Image 1 (spheres, one colour):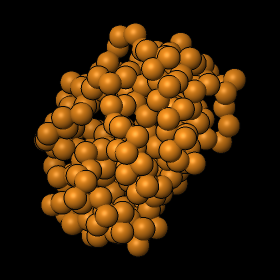
Image 2 (cartoon, helix red, strand yellow):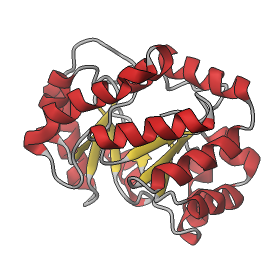
Image 3 (tube, one colour):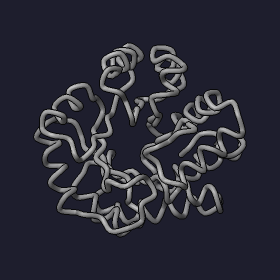
Image 4 (cartoon, one colour):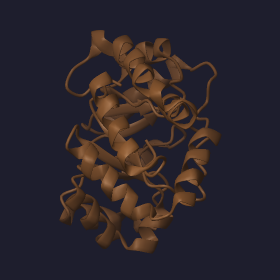
Length: 244
């Protein structure tokens, strides 16, 4: 959920409603002008948030409220981390109540600094793991991760609405479990509850982003129903870690 998409009071109400609808964890996006790994829906949401201004302040307010409802993780790109300063941003996110922060495009040469800053602030550092990595690359990425590993269900940008290659995802999650004991989470391309139901047995948690953001952009009052549809599809697999 991109922070700053709606006025503060409306955003807090949306978080309350989405939590009640079945979300077990919140991923709050820090708006960025060049969200290259995201598709048009989330990019448009970020641009709307950027136009509202006060991006970091709004993100911290969203995290603070969300963290009072469910465990909350921040999703960001490296550029904002670099501009605000890794140590400063990690401290602010932790003080707001975040349990972790995932830098989706974390540069290899900045990974050690970011991980140290996050560790000092008591933040987990989940890592987005591209499917094309070699075993050596997997070992490098997973060695610095904490919390969980994020295995995209699709290699396309967020918001992809086509078919998923389930055998390829199963093979990839097996590689991740061989490389690391961390839980494996999947998102990206899980565009319908039926797809979420098929992904769930392969992973420890399922992340639903664009379908909820799309409704927040066009018909915010429907966001709880969208969340509930995914949560219900995942219910047979639900633990404290696995739902919408």
